[in-house]
Length: 111
Length: 114
Image 1 (spheres, each protein chain N blue to C red):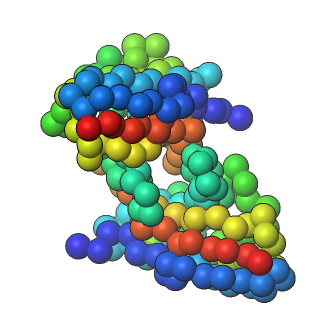
Image 2: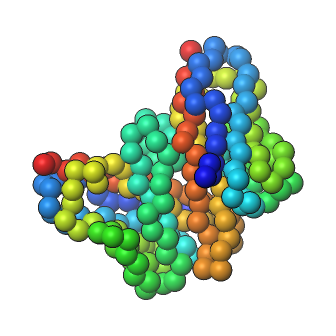
């Protein structure tokens, strides 16, 4: 079945650094969603992308829908300690409402 | 604004016991989902319901049943719990906007099977 591969699996960065992570699929997606999950909580939607090439920002976060429709990227600028968490990409499998999730990128920010 | 509400938040079961996780959403969404998340892992889809009256299997449906009781409610039942079902369970719902779909999650239910 379809899978979403995220990289890197984990990151340790210094406060103030920029962060980049990506998500790739073996098949085309029509929607890309990015979530953040903090310990003991459910995932929270950060950014939704609906068109190939789309670039969308939410504060210090910027995400892009890859033009091949098989990948997406999330950037965090000037990281702060509260950015710590797991970041997931997600999307609906072709022609369905069945959302699948990537394996996550674990981010730790060192003050 | 409640969003997606799941109960119970924590539950300990003995192997072989049954239980039902309840989920309700107040956003008038058509689609609802149940996911499980194992330690250090991503979310895996158990079952989903594209609309009221329909349910479909996800990636890991074995050992579970679901009921889409009405548009608001989607329950997940474990008929005979096994230790492998120890996990965090998340209910979610999705809207269909003019731009596309987005999916929203509940806070999770921590289930331990001993």
